[in-house]
Image (cartoon, rainbow, N blue to C red):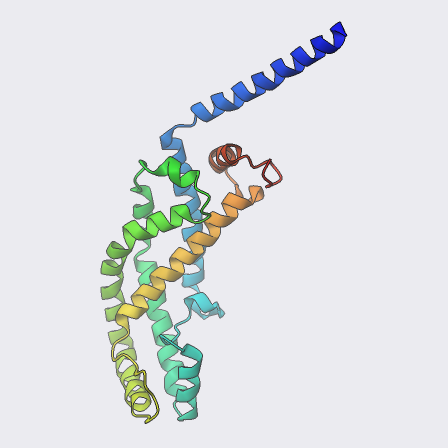
Length: 242
């Protein structure tokens, strides 16, 4: 009986000691480290996006221009009108405009992450929202990015002649009697916004992967920061809640 009591006491002591160790690890994780870990995760997502936009002709639907609204229906209608070559040209040129905007604005994206406010870093890290950091980043930086993207898109569209070709499409499509929703005469705002949304989608995918997949945490900082988040949420090393 005494041995059993002794074993229980020792087990309890070891357990409490383990808890204390975890608490010490948690307490030693500074707000700065949390912010740096989040920035590292966001940056990895950005690099994935930059790689995709650097090769816009690889067929990735995220980086390909699509008409606003019912894109497939609009494109089919235009091709039925015999405007396939114009549609192809406009699609390629607007896709290139998106690509150029992202590539030229790369420093803005990266600087935005570097300047991310660390005040909310811990709440973002411990959020159950798999895209909390991305959404915070997008909300705070989208206006600045749109301001930067729009002139790049304007210049690329003008130089490539995409604007004049798109005008032909607008005239032909809007002249169809049964069409109730007309095409907008200028898509430059739409192109800039679509490029921004696509970039943030890459970031969101990477953030979710790092949050949910331990093997995606490929640096000591990511392992430390997101490992702490798992511990706080009661998630074990297998990705399941305790």
